[in-house]
Image (cartoon, rainbow, N blue to C red; front, top):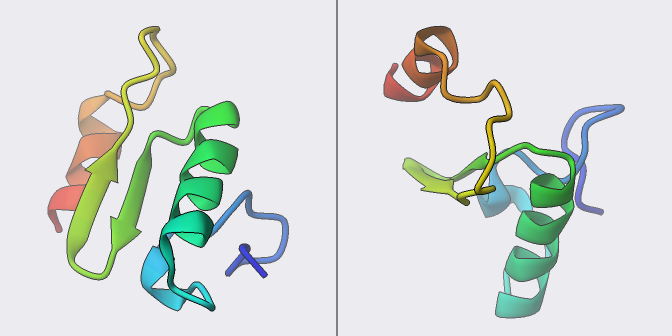
Length: 68
């Protein structure tokens, strides 16, 4: 199960993936990338995948969410 929130695409915090293995991490990042969700947590660490296009995810409001 990759979704941690009903209707979400992939897990926003991959620490909750089971099993927590390379395959599940990469699968989750790919699902979120395809949905243009370029920021994903692994516990306290944020992983950002560059989509090489503007997705609206780089606004100050979105960035502040990951600073707090």
